[in-house]
Length: 105
Image 1 (cartoon, rainbow, N blue to C red):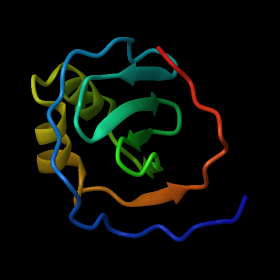
Image 2 (image 1 turned 30 degrees about the vertical axis):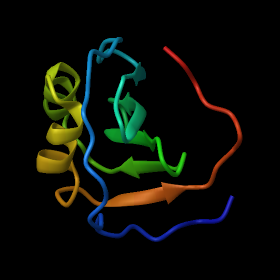
Image 3 (image 1 turned 180 degrees about the horizontal axis):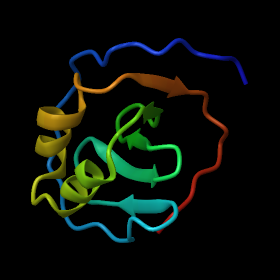
Image 4 (image 1 turned 90 degrees about the vertical axis):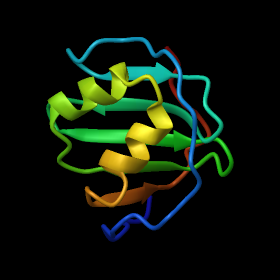
């Protein structure tokens, strides 16, 4: 896998979120009905929030995200709005090369 530079998030599409599952102890995988966010995973040890997007299928890792923010993201009624307002453009990120496999809830 090729190393990617960390860069600020550029403007992308908006999404509408729904309920998610999992807890913040250990890795958390959550899927949700959304027009642009397919699922997310959080690793509290590394504080990396991984987000998969519907349109591109791409994964991005957002770095040094506090667990409290992930808990708020998880409980937000509109996940896409929360992501756009509080995560995108607020945390460094890196695109992740596609491995062809992904976890599920």
